[in-house]
Structures are given as C-alpha cells and as structure tokens.
Length: 368
Ligand SMILES: *Cc1c(COP(=O)(O)O)cnc(C)c1O
Image (cartoon, helix red, strand yellow):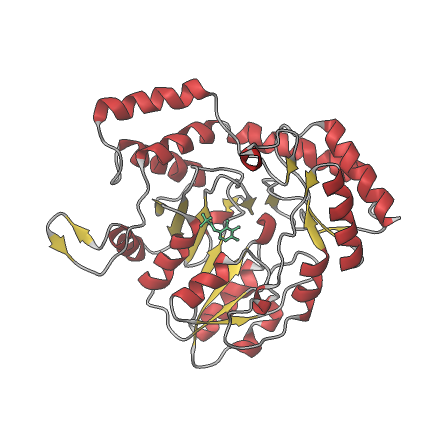
C-alpha cells in the first residue's frame, strides 16, 4: 500500500487551486435543493453568464473539457482534408485532428514566443487545406493579424486552442475570443479550472447555435436535428468554476509574484525565458518555461531538481510532428530543437519563496 501514499513534500510543476470549502458547500446546498445535477442546470448557466460578462462576449459555451471543445469546433464547421497546426502544444491539439480523421500539417514555430510561425503557413496551403488550428502556447498570443489575413486570402477557418489563455487580454480583448472559434480548457491544472471543463467561443451566432446543439446530442426536447455528442458539463463542475472565478485575480497576482521571483533570481546568461514577449498584453502567468542551451543541460537540471523532490515538466515534449502514431513524417527543426531543451518550472500562487530560491540556485549552478 506504500506506493499510494502521496508525498506531501513533493513540489510539482503545478498545484490545483481549491477555493475555501464553505464557498463550494454553499453551492452544493443549492444543488441538493434543486435536485438538478447536469444538463445545463442553473449553475452551469450562471457560470456561463459570469464568464460572458468577464470576456465581454455572448457566444460562450461551457463544455466538458478542452479537447471536446476543439472537436465540437471541427465538426460544427464541417472541416475536411488537411488542418495546418503547430507542433509545439499539448498532444490534444494534434490528437483531435487525427481523431476526427483529418490530416495534421505542421508548420514550424517562432524561436522567440514558440507559437506557429505565420510566415511559414502559406507554403503549406493546398486545395485540401480547410483550417488553421494554432495554440497560444503558454498564453503567448499567436500572430493574430497575420493569421487572419492568410485565412481570408485562402478562405480558411481559424481555430485557436486557447487552453493556456484564460485571463489573458490582448489589445484589451480576452485572448479566448479570437478566430472563428477559440477553445479553452478548464482542467484542474490550468490557471482557472472547473475540475474538468472547457469552453468554446465563436464569432458567428449561427455557428454558436450549432455548437450549442451538438454539445447536447443534437436534439432539443423531442426534436432531433443532428448527430451530436455529449459535451455538456455538470452542476458540480460549474459550482467549482463559480467559486474559482471569484478568486481569479488573486490567483493571477499570486502567480505573478512567483514569476517575478524567478525573474529576479535566475541567471539569464545561459537560459532563455519565452513568455511576456508581446506588447499590448495583460498576462495570466500560466507557465514559467525556460529554454536551456542543450538537452543535456535541461536533463541535468531535471535530475538535480528531482533529487530535492522538485519536479519540473518537459512542457512541451516531444514536438508533436514526432508523435510515433502519425502517418507521415514531417520535419519542424525549431520545434524539435526547443522541445528537447525546454522545461516548465513549478508555478502556483502559494509556492514558497524559499523553494523558488532553491530552484533558482540549483538551476544557476547546473548551467554555469
Ligand atoms: C490542457 C490542454 C488541452 C486539453 O484540455 P483538456 O481540458 O484537458 O481536455 C488542449 N490543448 C492544450 C494546449 C492544453 O494545454
């Protein structure tokens, strides 16, 4: 039984936020009164309304996770053939394309912000291309203007996987509202979470209604319109979201404090920071990724931190074009190189200063 005991001293890359339990209990009481557990009940509707106000967009849908959010977008827009995408993201971004029987066509990334390199998109477009699916990796905004122009020129749809972007504003507008569709994840490891959960935001009201319909099996009462899926979320998840939303500002402030401590203590002569590079950005401090000079040094840092019970993660590794189950071999040299050398450091609002200092000391001594 020993191996199921959780090591309390282990420092992971993240730790899920939990609201004061009384706040959650109060909403649970309302569920026990209403006896409504799911199917877009009052708490799910309330969470949707609160987020609509926050992001200043009415076309927001709460769904069961950030992966099905992308699937709903692909299905609703009836995409086919090839989708241009980024090799530097969580595997879900590629998996959904494959799962929907479409072909991912990878475009390499910028070395500065690790987002899809918009200057390399056009050369990958052909008559089979139906869309661009790009991730705002770590909450760094993609080159929205350039991608928009290319999409218009070639009549392509744009989906942004904005799983890292809740709480980020770009040019005064929420980063989870760009493109034809933006999807977000509210998984418990993200800045804002509903335990499991996600969202879809779209520009077009008709598309919004279609996604809303297929989120609930494609029927309304006794009328059956389309072969939908189950992408709904429950009242219990919505309750967690309502509680966590109240704490979002302090969660982000806490993360920012950790960020600045890393900024002040890491030796940037031999490591590179890849977030907070855009102008016009209000950032959510979602990840603290650093790129080392070589994979060897990155792995040495992992080993040295692990010895102290500290566990950074290789976010994102491997480069998704190298997933072994893909049908074609595509090369993305920048993404492959950076995936080998990048680590995300532990980051959560109440990460102790002593631990941050210890992490920085270890890293600085390994790289020097
Ligand atoms: C977390 C994440 C997802 C998946 O979201 P789930 O809610 O876990 O399904 C998709 N894309 C990116 C970039 C992510 O980080």
